[in-house]
Image 1: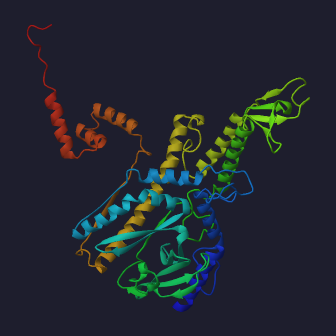
Image 2 (image 1 turned 45 degrees about the vertical axis):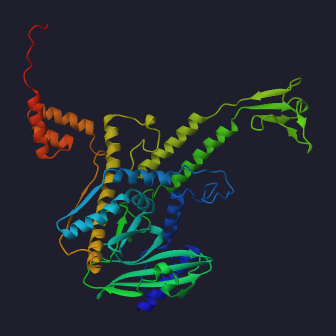
Image 3 (image 1 turned 120 degrees about the vertical axis):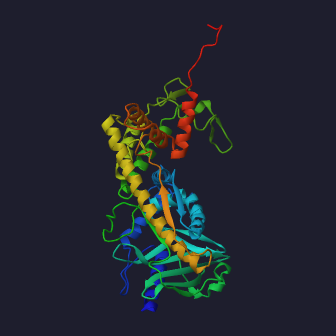
Length: 477
């Protein structure tokens, strides 16, 4: 049975590499359908500023149109990731094992902003730890670089294939790493392939064909564990492409066509700027001709050669042309589209659109802030869940690698809540409550200055000491 499944995986990934198309084969329930695969490809293209409708792809190759990207994919996912992780803190406590895990997790937290951006853009991110000498390193696998095979009843991935590719001289080497939960434990299989074409998996070769893979075991089974040794961060947005799939969708899923419209509107604005540039139409008789018979223009961007007569005006050598520009109407149209993008992506108006054009009544500001707050909070919860699963996998590898003594651990996470609560407004409210005797001075300092109870008591004592009565100095007025 496993051989049949593995052959199907090889065939499936071979199709993915060649045609970017996933099809169900044999008797395996595939966890991603062709619609999801196509949409993932589009999300990636939008993130990389290379959707099908733009003029230049990532390699600078011209396409047969004049549409330019606003970079909304990267902007949306980057803004969400920045807000989610800006004040992120994580700590693992409880034992010597906890101290070891805390050191490993700290390196992950340092990278979370960029990795979260990838996860938001593509709908998900896998964090796969492994032993690296005397520490635990983590591979971050983006949604288009791993292949889920099956899920359990809770929607957690129970089997998946990861691919590691390297180009050595004129050949492509691919390593397929298959994780699957079985009755015996977590079964891990590694196989290597060699091909002369990037789009082809090629023929199987020994793992020792690549120096970096030489020490990897072809097969291993890890017993007495509850789940596979990787964590999946799923962007917390409903999957309306494949409602039965636990896979995540992009943070801008549902806004793809709006992003296309925004790119078109922006391109139209750029065309308007170029078309409305001031120009001087000069009579051909006033221009010199080069050796090739072409007119020598003083400034090719400003001057244009014209045959004399009515086109310029009888008796005139030049005519100035300075047309009106429709920048206000064009920018207003773009702004309207951007506000729809913001709504679809769960962002407050003014995040992408012009904040000066957004109505600013107290109710509207509150609703806008709540929309962004819900998006950020849900993403933080999803990320925290994935990091707790990552810690479980790190704990298993720490035991397998004899990296630290066994022991209990407890993880705690802190997230920035400034998007939910305005600090200045909250401080003013606390001052009013403190002056009315509803809140103590101690609580006020702890809440608004981030002090511990001992620190707050010390500072209050210092304040009291500085409030000594003022005495007049004799002889001075």
